[in-house]
Length: 88
Image (cartoon, rainbow, N blue to C red; front, top):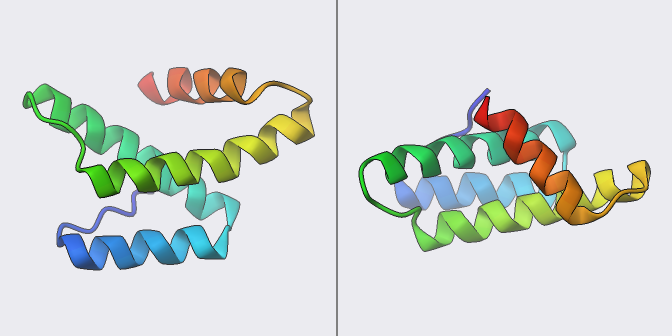
């Protein structure tokens, strides 16, 4: 599932609500959406918008920290594993 909203202000509000709620499934969908959008932007020779990049980092921090604690692994290891899975 993706949570992309084309209009920037509406997208910020949606992403903000997802982060505040902290629901794992929605955080995962947000991360997946932003990873895919970042790749789309890269294919066009562009970068992810700075606000989208901030939301991505916040969502990663929230979700990956929880995974790291539960699994007894380092944050960076979780981040690499998720990035590899989403790249498939």
